[in-house]
Image (cartoon, rainbow over all chains, first blue to last red; front, side, top):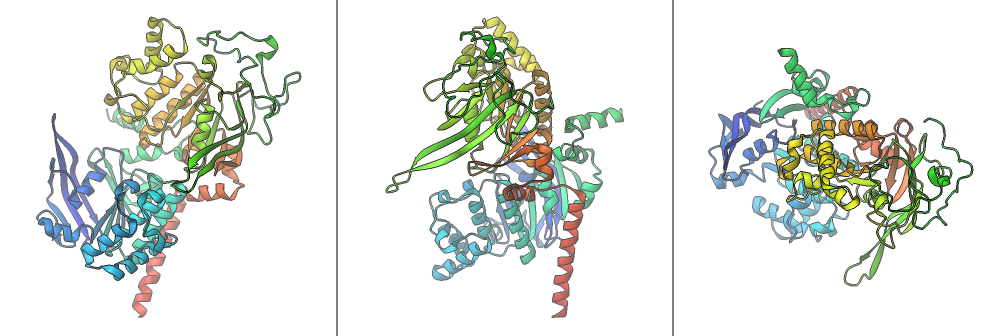
Length: 282
Length: 348
């Protein structure tokens, strides 16, 4: 079965006053239908930028090049804007880290969900309203009919993220990209949101790309993991292999920096590890 | 250090009811460095102000109790909207705690549980509505005015967001020297020397002295924030989510730094965090808060081995684990669900 999203040799650079900055340097990536892929890396590893490039959401200062960037057999590089709009937000959707900031504070939650339904599916009036209630029920918001009349500031962070997820699954997408969806949330809420994403993913056979820096989240969600560092792919493995036998020194360093893997009171840091391996090589 | 903190005979046991009032007992005689004697030293009997028993089920083994709270509450009055009138939010409701010198008390809980409010009270930013706070055995009452200068320098705080907590227009050297200007009468040359020395202590370079905050990474800025807090030689450092904004590898470096500094200066930490794996690594004692109340407290090992309160157990269950067996079990569960689904489809 062909992967739903295939990327080969993707590079992204930004024009800056001091010359080009290369955020992503030749990354290969593919996701199958119904698969959960975690992209893990620290800030500056290019994990978000790579996915924004797929979505076509990067600013004009970015230069995106790729040998292959295709979604369900269609070439994402050569899409016209209107063709892209038909895919983005419908077949590929994305949720972000800051749920409060992702929603428009000036409109009710109901309006914003119905807007998605209107633009992509042409639903209006009562049918859109009914579907919106269904969606909020599916993401586990209590009193969904009342919540439609709420503004984002009247909801908690976890509730806003549920609304974002409701909007993201409104058109039954084949691929959902979640960029640090739980980083701003408490652990108990994080668990609920991750469980929700995983159950929706399995139910609808959706592919899910989860961008995160949290190895715990990776361990609890992913089928397959890609580790990125400074714009490059360091390692790709099944979740079990990655934690059991990490191949790349950076992955090993990352795992040993986890507080739960500490021996005694000292944590090993990535720098220790890289120095060590550099020292060993010389 | 392992003996229970029993009542020291002959010491005045202050209770929550009577102890409110500005420092009647002296601060402990350690680190006289630049806590200059603005206040008259009371009698020598007050030199070792070990308070009464460290309240009911006070945490773990205690040497001398550096920080203690008794029945601390904090209410906020908020407007209830157009017709709502005024409402009272009970952010902290009757919290007791005590921390021994050189130990780390971790306060755990989700947003809105009152842990940051408590941090502000401990740091003498806000007064408690009721209850008594004792710093080095000395009851503190700041609702009437500012805390005395020598007392204020005993407790310092490091905030979560190192981008927001440093003035972008202030050079690092000035960031570090400012607490000395405000709290001590040291001459300028001495202030500069100390700031340079502190930069080195937190793993930065002397040439960073004249740079601005934007020239540093998140981890470096957090080192600067820690250095600033340590400039006045505090006994207690309140760390409000100090590593939650940092990357994993930087988090490890900052946690190591904090451990080193604690050892070197004999610091007492109040470590506020929602990350249980970090808490497990760094804490001696743990206090779990829910809606302004302490629902569980105890030594780290006891709390992690056998959590008593339902909420603590929920918190533990929600924390992601990177344990191999857990991953294997999850992967297998998913595979079997998938097989079951395929069989269902096939049998149709």
